[in-house]
Length: 188
Image 1 (cartoon, one colour):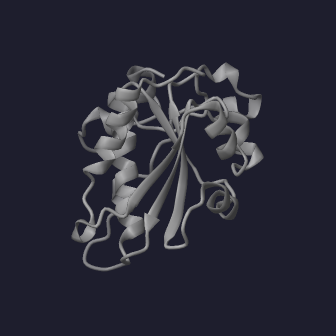
Image 2: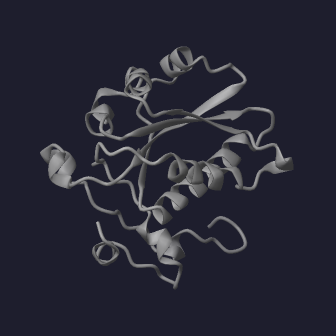
């Protein structure tokens, strides 16, 4: 979806860089490999996310080969697997529970990654629908790490490649007005 098309779904209340409006989660991915250097720029951007005490609690376990992706497919719920199976890269974001900010810091790293993807002409989609216990087992994730999310990364495909019900949802979502997200002084 082109920037002009996205603008019909998303309007900011205040002027911001278009990268924020252009970031959305499509479900249709092309079976087109992402070049190594381009992919590493996404993770490099995530590397520079701020973190409490510079602990950098995030780790990304990535799958790029058909064999690695098949392992990831084993723990992604069927409904999500229906659309994400074409993504050429899958990643699981985990965070070291060494302090109380690990989830917040890891979410920031994910945000940096998703914005760099837009700059690279790629799309991402965070997937919460997966079996975390099975992911922990098959990926050998130590107990000191929380499993945050699975991420599909790749080039956006045509919405017609999706089932009819997913096609209806293949567009950027809007947001509530900014005034509903800011509370002054105290919660009212």
